[in-house]
Every structure is written in structure tokens, then in C-alpha cells.
Image (cartoon, rainbow over all chains, first blue to last red; front, side, top):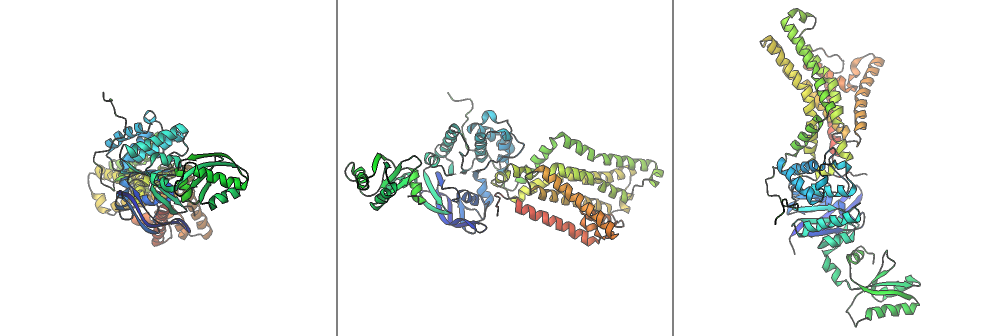
Length: 311
Length: 281
């Protein structure tokens, strides 16, 4: 197995009586790792526990080989954290704010200022670096949060929903930055998101959380690989018995937002068109019209849906 | 052809400071940002006017000893000076202190601060240092300078020799005021995201406890109830430190316990409120 950046060993975290993480054991390999899960799955809680914001009720957290409970300052000196919510130091312009964050992370004043300029250019705020952060748009605030997380050159970056509230162009640019950091600049990162395309585009590995537990984990290619052949199906007629018949025939069905159903066919691949013929046969038996039937490829969405039990 | 300036991400190869110094960054930045405000500078200048007046007073008494019969330069004068600075302590505390944590809470800055390699104690210490620096600058510094002026104008140490207790009394009386005011304001500042609300809360707390004391003293006809007033307790302790007859009947130990309680409550509030994540039960 690849070297680990983060290890959680039987970690439980609770907010009062509410359990947020339940006996979680997972290893984050180095590189870009996506932390996926629906809202309330425990993604942000996991990051905050790794930062030492929330002490776990039980278990052991290790970041870059350091125990978070024993050496929180050393852990945080090697981490960069981009929080989900807007956050800045009031009354500062962008370059002062980022340099201040660099100083807080242990950089000498002059180095912090130089790094602040460089990092602001890198995230695309070079021209706006003397503006007060409070005047920034949502997209710019996301970028400056990334800049403050990067200024001290962390070995590991925690990105909590980095594309929240960004327009499509800004979102693409942010994802490019994240991808560049992970794949070209050698910065290990954990990207927490509920947006599957974001994770699929930027990360190599994924860990899916659901209801405070790890639902599945592994490399994206590996997880997408052996799930079966995927077909997109749209029918006219009574859907429920048709789905039941497909499930009884050993297939997995998942409805999507786009009026089509994704059907995963498992088992050995037969002759060309076998899967389509089996689906049509079930439809004919029930008098359902097949309006759309075409092969697709397994996506992270299929992996995610299976992991959290939507299939 | 290589670009003039490579605007890409580069790894940092320089030195890093040892951990545990972030409080100094917080305090120096806080002090600089406060000093950047003209109104605050004006307030600081005003806070030194009593020092100038007292210096003239000491000079006049030294040059014309007869003036000392009406306005003597004695231990009581130094005590009065320290007490007189109370009004400036109030304004500086409200001006600087009310936003110290409240502004960070409003801007969600606590999660930024505490994701850096610094302890919550360092954050609180850094913020506290901002307020304590200014409060010390308008209490302890002018009070000790005033004592130095007395020695300088008199040209001897006779007054100091005769009243050796005045030095620790000045230091302790000032530090009590600085610490109690700063910690109470920091605790209040951590309770809200609104600077204005914090300022009103602090003002209300000071005036309410003072009014309560006046009312209770009127009803009971005794000053034993001075312990309900923060200022009353500080004055009570100050009287004892300067070896003056206590102006209130409240036992010294009660005043000390009340102030210690206030400090303990403030620290407890700060401990609960300054966190990287806010847990709403």
C-alpha cells in the first residue's frame, strides 16, 4: 500500500449525544484523496478532528506520522486548512491577511510577505491583493481561503468544499488549481465534497463516508472498475414492477435526476447485446416500453450510490 | 525565454520560527492596527493629560513648598492619580477590547487562527497582550514616571525612603485594574459577534454594579455592600495597598474573593468560547 498521509484508528467523535463519527478506521494514502459523503456524513467533522478542533471520544488520529493528540502544533504547522465557511481576519487587505497567516504559521515576516504575493498570484488574486477581503465576492473569498492555506507551504492540504458558491468558470479554475497542486506541485491533499465531479476530476483516491462511518474507500479507478456494465434505460409504463424484475434478475437499478435509470449488470460479459436483450425481455414480459437504452461507463456516482445504499 | 516572474506555486525553502511565538505576532499586529486609528491615538494622548497636570503640581510644590499645604504631594496623591486613570481605563478597554474577539467571531476568524500552529492559550494571550499593553501604558507607566518626577524634582530619595510601600502599591493597584478590566472585556468580547453589543454590555456591567452599590448602600445605610460593585472592590483593595483607611466597610478578603471570582469566570468563559468549532447543543 502507498505511504499514508492520515490514519484514523477506531475514531469516534460526538457532539453531545449525537455521534458524528462512529468507530472509523481508515487510511488516507498520499496524493489527492476525495472525502465524499452526503450532507451530515461526518466529512467536516473528520477534518476538524484531524486539526484538533474536536477531541475524539475514542481512537487515535495520525497525520503525517504524528499523533494529533500528542503533537497538535507540529501537525498544524505542516497542514493547510481551507474551511468550508467564509473566514478572514477583519480589517485586512488580502496580502496583509495572507502574510499574517504565514507569520502565524512560523514564517519570518519578510518571507511571509513574499510568499503572500506569490500565492495570491497563483490563486488568481494578484490584481486584487490590495483590496480589503471583506469586499471580495464569494469566488474570491474561496480563492483567498486557499491562499491562506498555502502560504506556509504545507505538506498536506485539507480542502473543505472548495467550490462552494462559485460560478461555473470560477469552479473550473478552482478545480484546476487543486488538480495542479496535487499532480504537479507535489502537495498531498484531502478534498472534502459532496460534488462527485469535483472529486472525480481532482482526486486519485476516494473515501466515502455515510452516517459517520466509512462506506467504501479505494482508488477511483479500482472502485469504478469491477462494479459491472452500466446501461442507461428510460421506459414508459409501470416502473416499480420493472425495477423489481431487473433486481430479481440480478441487476442493480438507480434512478437519476435526468429521467433515466442507470442499470448495472453484473456477471461475465456474454455476446454483444446480451445485456440489452435481457433488459428488453424483462420489459416485454411486463408490457413496458423501452424508450431509451444505451451503454454507459461506471462513474463515481455509481460507486457513491452503491456505497451509501442508494442502489 | 524564461518569464520575468514565475507566478506559479513554489515550495518554501527558508527557515521557520520555533513554535509558540504566534502570540507575539497576534499582539504586535493588534497593537499596530489600534494605533492606526486617529481617534484612539487622541484618546491615548488625553490619557496622559493627568500625568502632565500632576507633574506640574509636583514641580510647583517642590519649588514653592507652601503650595503643598493645599495640594500635598503624598502617598494619597499617587493613589488618586491611579484612581483617576480609571476613566481612561474604561474608554481604552471599550475602544480596543470590545472587538478583540467579537470581530474574529463575526468574520469566522477563529477557525483560521486555530488551524495554524498555535494554542488557544496563545490566541487569548496575544489578544490579551494588546489590551494590557495599552492599559499599562496609561496606568502603570505614567504612575511610575510620576514617582520618578517626584524624585527628580526633589533631587533626593527622601519621599521614597519614607514611603517605600508606594512602589509595590502603584504596581499592584495598576495591575489589578489592568488584569480585571482586560479579562472581563475579553470574556464579554468572546460572547458576541457584535462589537457594539459588547461595548454596551461592558458599560452596563460597570454602571449597573456601581448603581446597585449606591442603591443598596442607600437602603441599608452601610457601605458593607460595596462588594457588589467591581469598582468598589478595586477601590477597597487600593486603599489597603496605599495604607489608607478603607473607604468602605466591606472586608478586604471579600473584595479580593469577588475580584478573583470575576477573573476565574472570565477565564472560564474564554476557555469555553474560544474554539475552532462552535458546538450548538
